[in-house]
Image 1: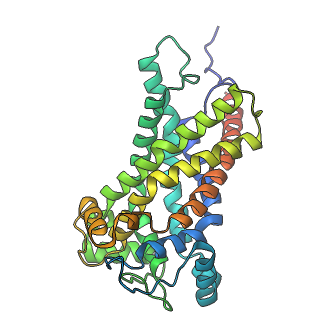
Image 2 (image 1 turned 180 degrees about the vertical axis):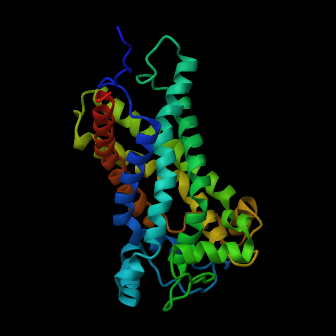
Image 3 (image 1 turned 180 degrees about the horizontal axis):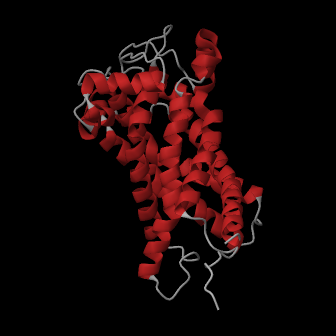
Length: 321
């Protein structure tokens, strides 16, 4: 009797590669919708940079909605979608790693800690947090050059200049310009801040999502379906916004600088708090909520569907052998 390759059952997880593409595609769909808010958030985090909190500094962006209207009025649709292509590529790297590696890392740790239990059903908060942080840090490192270009493209405006202005014609022009001026390591300016920011957000996003989903099902508050996914994602989005915003402000400042205003994340943190006050770490928080909550909802809801699609494709391919 000849041996045949083992077929995947319907209950098995998608492969790492499948998770990479499923997570990345879901994130690209979400970022297309939320990118205008990201543009405004970036500019809100930069306005009043290192100015005393009682100084009379112009703040043209008052809130997310007004900010989007200001950008649209002055720069049109193109201005609202600045850095979108860079954001797409970044999302493929970041969320492909973060969402694609999260489950494999979590399952591996669950197998080590709970060898007699099904690793897919174990919900250990510490393991979930570690898995989110490690997968997020990997994604942040891979995607850092793209986020650097994206931040600078989104902060640039020929009508209202906020922070240090850098003009790139596109993604490749940005990457090549940075490489020409600062070498390979210049492409990874601020990667330490990116790792901290993304690890902080990733460490709470999927654990909160899975915990909320599990509790809502366990207590029979909601049934499996889109409504459950939306509600769980909303909880996750709020948690991400609260935890990540201070590190997001720091990351935006470090990525956008052309001169050495900050030597690193800690130096940036100290200078912001000392000069602008501790609440400056929550600049753009309204935009953060308005961006992260819908982005998280869209990303995770899309992911439920893209993972099913990827799983179906993989099962079809495996059944052919």
